[in-house]
Amino acid sequence: MQSIRSLTPWQAGALLATVAVLALLYWLGVSPETSASGLMLANAAGALELKSIVDAIQKGFDDFKAANDARLKALEKGQSPADFDAKLASIQSDILAKAAAKTELEQLEARLNAKGLVGGGAGAGPDADQLAYKNAFISRFVRKGVDDDGLRALQQKAVQISVPSDGGYAVPRMVEQEIEVLARDISPIRRLARVVTVGTSDYRKLVRTGKAGAGWVGETDARPATGTSSLNEVIPPIGEVYANPMVTQSALDDIYYNVEADLVDDLTTSIAEAENTAFVTGSGTNRPKGFLTYTTAATGDASRAFGTLQHIPTGVAGALPASNAGDMLLDVIKALKAGYRAGATWVMPKDVLFAVMKLKDGAGQYLWQPNLTQNGLSLNLQGYPTEECEDMPAIAANSLSIAFGNFQRGYTIVDRVGMRMLRDPYTNKPYVGFYTTKRVGGAVVNSEAIKLVRFAAS
Image (tube, rainbow, N blue to C red; front, side, top):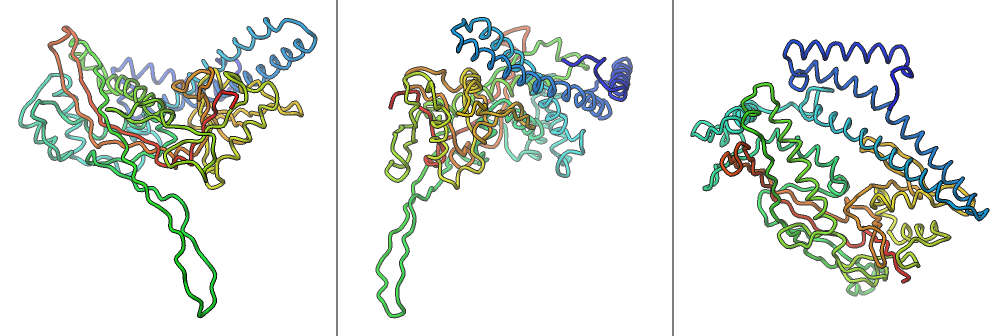
C-alpha cells in the first residue's frame, strides 16, 4: 500500500484533513455511515487510496512479466525454475490482495451511491411510504421484534403485499436494492448476465433459432414457400436461496450499532456467493441451472442441437497446449459468431487466470494486457476482458475451466420480486437470527452465445 510520503503535498493534506474531520465526527457521536458529509469525506479518502492501489497493481503486473521472463530464460539454460516459481506465486498473491482491497473500496462506493449520499444518487429517491416502512422495519421489527398492525399497514403501503401466514416481513425495497447493487460486485455471472425481475415464478422465454428463408423472383413468377425459423421455449428453473445472519441482542440494543449495514453485508455475501455457484454449476433442481451443467459437443452452431453448448478442446488432456496456446484461444473466439463478440468476456478461476498470464505469442509478446475497470481487476486476453470466477473448475482432464461468450445474450437470471425476513430470537440465544429468503432462477437461453474450453485431447 502506498506510503503517505509518496503522496503529493495536496494529496497528503487532503487525506490528513479528511481523517481529522472523520475523527471529529466520531468524537461528536456522529456515525460517518449515517452522515452525508461523513460519507462524502470517506469517499474522498477512498479515492486517494484507490489510486494508490491501482498504481501498486500496475507495478505488480510489470514485476510479474519481468519474473516470468527470467523464469523462461532459466529454463532455456537448463536451470531450475523453482526460485522463479516461488517469486511468481508471491507476486500473484500480492496482486490478488491489492485487487481485493480495490474491490472493497469499490463496494463501499457502491453502498454510498445506493444510499444516494454521494454523487447525488440516481433518480428522485424513495417515496415517503418506502422511507417510513424502512425506518420502522429497522427500528421496530429488526431491533425490537415488534409485530403489530401498524407495521403491517406500513408494509402494505410501501410494497403492496401482506404478511405471510407464518409471519415475517418483506425486506424494504431500499435495503433490497442495496443488496442487489453489492451482489453484482461479488457475483461475476450476475454482473455479466441478463437479469429480469418478475412477479411470479412462471417466467418463460421464447428463443428464435434458424433463419427465415428468402428468394428472388420475377414480377409474375410463382412465390414458393421459404424456410422459416423455429421458436424454442426456455423456462429457467427457480429456487429459494436463504441466509440466516446472527446478531446479539446487546448489539441490537446499541443505538450506535448500524444493524442495517451489518445485515446488508452478511446477506449480500451469503446469498451472492450461493447464487454465483448455482449460475455456474447449479443442477436446476430447486435452484438455477448452471451453464456448465448443459450437454456439450465439439460441433459448430449449424449442426448442434438447441440447448447444447459447444466446447473447444485444448488438444492436451488436463493442460493448456505447450505451444501455440494463442491459436487455440483464437479458435475459441472464432467459434463465437460476430454478433455475439461485442460484449463477450472470458470467465475462468484464479489458477487458470494466472496460468494464462504466462502465455506468449510467437513474437514473444504476452497474450494478455492488464485492464483496471470500475468492476475491478481484469485482463484483456486476445482483446477481450476476463472475469475471475472461483466457481469455475480447476484444470483437470476433460474439465471445462474456461468459458467465453456474451453472457448478456446467453444466460438469463430471473429474480422473483421481494425478499422476506423472519426474526428468530429463540433458537440460538443470546443471538437473534434473521432468516431471509429470496427466489431466484437462471438458465442458458441462447446456446450459441457461450463457448467452453475443454481441457482434453479432443
